[in-house]
Image (cartoon, rainbow, N blue to C red; front, side, top):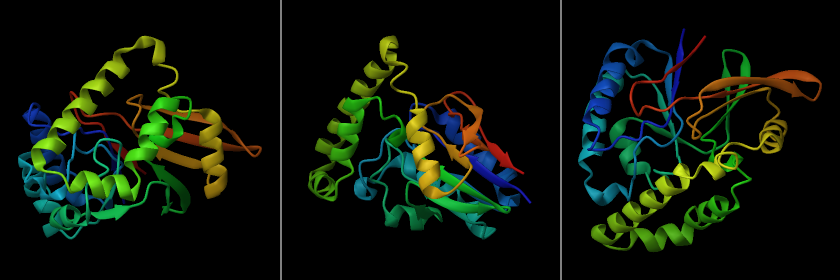
Length: 230
C-alpha cells in the first residue's frame, strides 16, 4: 500500500523533459499506487479550461494509464493554476480538493495544503491571493479573450520571478510557523503535507504538547520529487 504526493511540477512547453518524466512516473509507478495527490502548481500557468492548452493536452494523455487502471487522483489548486476547473479535472481523471483538506492516511489524520496561504509574512502576496481567488475576479478574468488572459499570466509570472530573485524577501516567502500551527490546530491534526515553497524537508515540532510534523514537497524543475507513504 503506497500513496503518492507531488506538487510544483510547473509544467510548461519550455520544459518538455519534465512532461516526459511525469509521463514515465504515471506509467511506471502511479498506476501501482493506492492514490496520487497533486498539491498545486501542476502548470506554470493556467488561464482557463477553454484555452486549448497544448501542455494540458499532453498532461491528459499522460494520465491515461491512471484512468485506465481506475486509480484515484486528487488535485488541489496552487498559486499558478487556481483557475483549473471541473472540466479539465474530469478530462484528466482528477478529483478536485479544496485547499486545506484532511484525509485519513493509513490511520493518521493528515492535513493537505498547497502552502501559499501559510506564507503570511508576505503581505503583498496575500493581498494578491485574496483578490484573484475571489469568485468575482475570476468571473471577470475568464470573460476576457485568450490573448488578454495570456498577457496577464505572462506579466504575473515575470513579477513573481523578480519577487523570488530578491534575496531580501526570502524569509517572508517561507511559511509562518504560527500560521502552520493555527491551521493544524483548527484541523485537529499532527501531520501536515504541503508544497509551494520548493524547500523539501520534514520539520518536527511540538503542537499542544505532542509531536507534530510538517513535510514540504519538492518541485519538478529539474527532476521528479515524490513523497511516498508509507
